[in-house]
Image (cartoon, rainbow, N blue to C red; front, side):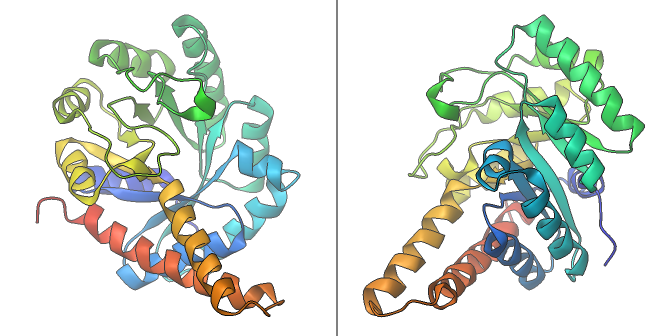
Length: 280
């Protein structure tokens, strides 16, 4: 199947009042598992690669090209997205490699500086046909630097989108990155106000900390793109531990990475179904 853009997936979901899952790739098994889960569900999906993951692999190209290859061979629409990039150079590399979208994160900057930096990145990406997500109102838990109590103001969100021309907006509504429990309390009324205030898809970061009911309610309130990473990493690691506990003599990593990949694929399929049928 030809590579699809994140924008096509997100705008289709927004028009249908459904959500789309965006799952983080750490290594190639994650990309394969996410695509396999999407195929099982018969639904589109977004593969995300963060700046931290690119750094882990010594650069974006190895894991980026592998993820693009997985996306191109999938039997359902799969997009490849750069997640939480603070480096403009990394954004340019993602565009060069063929990513269909980027998330440029200048949220740690003062508002005016965030607007200026994001506007420049957006102009560059749009000149290459690449969709841009940005962040306003810091999401909690990112490297311990953001306060979980921060919330995005709808009026500021409207002004930010108009000033920068971004295609999607990550907003702070109560979730927090890297949560190990699924008990975050979201502000659904705020999500609805933000949906009404801006004309672009909203993005929920830190969704690993949100339970199924909360995810469905967030989509019902107006959230479109839902980012999940830590939750899948927990399942991946649990499956590896279980296999090694039962087979202490195993040396071939395929013996334990395979079951981990299968566990993630099954959960991706389940979560995509939750997001695609909010309230049904």
